[in-house]
Image 1 (cartoon, rainbow, N blue to C red):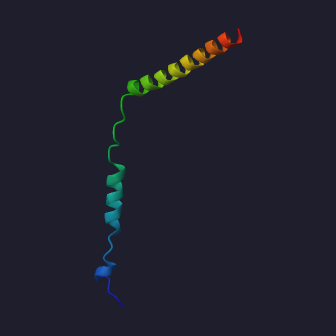
Image 2 (cartoon, rainbow, N blue to C red; image 1 turned 30 degrees about the vertical axis):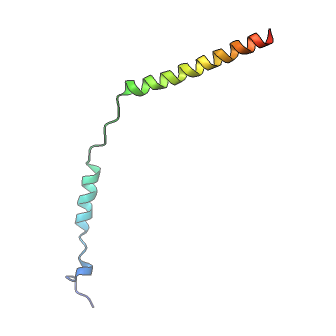
Image 3 (cartoon, one colour; image 1 turned 180 degrees about the vertical axis):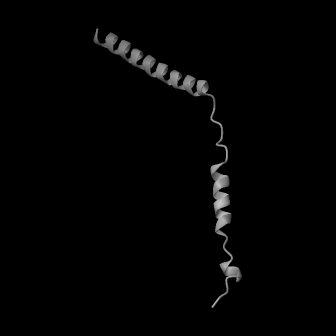
Length: 64
């Protein structure tokens, strides 16, 4: 029989609870400004629209 004070039974459940609470209470990393992400998204949308217009113009000249 092993006694509760033996090294292999030296588990502290409160220690893992404290580590979990510290993990939960950490501040999340700040995300970049919304304007930068919105600007790149707007650029992609404008690029797709421009590509569609170019394809439509080329198709119109090819069929005329």
